[in-house]
Length: 430
Image (tube, rainbow, N blue to C red; front, side, top):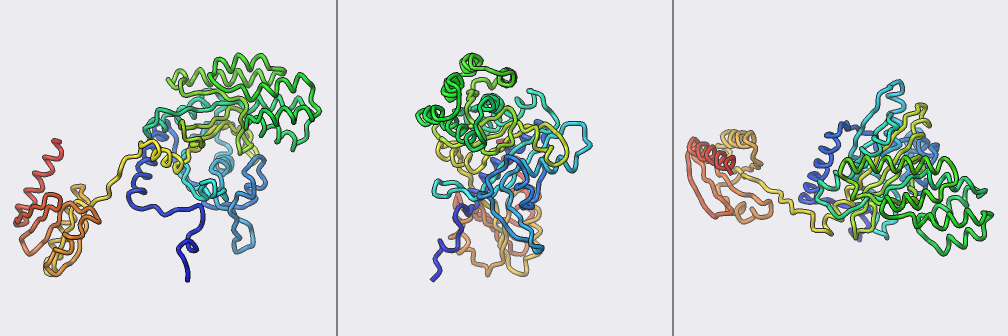
């Protein structure tokens, strides 16, 4: 015997009508925001050659990719990341373009995530990529678009953790640690694991001065002005100082947007995608605990495809966003409904179809069906499809049953259209 659980893969879901309508509404809202800032929508393939990702420095772990084999024996992967395909597209199709590029997308992402932790293996991500612009104004605009997206979705209680990857990287470069030790040090600092960090530093070949600085880096978290003051006291090379200057510049621009109150500085966090080269950020809705938005500057990614284009962008996890909207009761109920169900016998089919077409042209949602002259079945089951009114067409006559009000009216077709036109006037007034 085959059970349902054996037919349904882990980490994916069915979406029913109301849920899908709500998701579409959120996506359309966010797409309008992207467009209002001049970001033009694009789409990249759902799968690409595995070599595209395996040959890129700093990409997602290969163990998290869904792999396929094509007819020629080449390995493909389902899209595990949206930024890399966009970078490939920009570098190959706009190689000679000297102007900046502003792209947006809404796409499915596929990853072999840990489903026991509630992570989905297929989720929808909306995002923007701003290429060819290396100014702090570009970074600030990208972050501002992310903040506006959260605001337009009904959130107020959220914050953006803003960091600068060069600050920590430049500090780590002062050590003689190997690649794996550097990764471990990164993780200890990001997880703010003070005890293990202190123990790791004590065992490593690192000077007492550097140990003291590294132990303080995880505490560089909080209000921007205070964090900047503490961080500047730890600067030991030019790159660290430049990173802080850049971060402060981006923050000042965000204040001009009126978004300063949403910003928290965190100079100890990194990103899973290691292709970031400057400002990085993560968005959190308070009391949710998971990242709903993340991104940053990646100036070297397109260079790996043969064209150097500085860039900044972010991705917004739509599924996580809807999950937290449900938790915060921001999510509104969406009703799928039908304004009119038109029933007809065969001899009245042509007139019924004409009525359906006229109603749809007026903007109504209309269904139709042939019947034997008895509408009781349809009336009884109208709640399931949320049908507002049932129209029975019989020759030149129309019987209208308002299901919500339990009212029945009879008209000839001309009278029906007159009543319909009056309804439209009433709706427009209200």
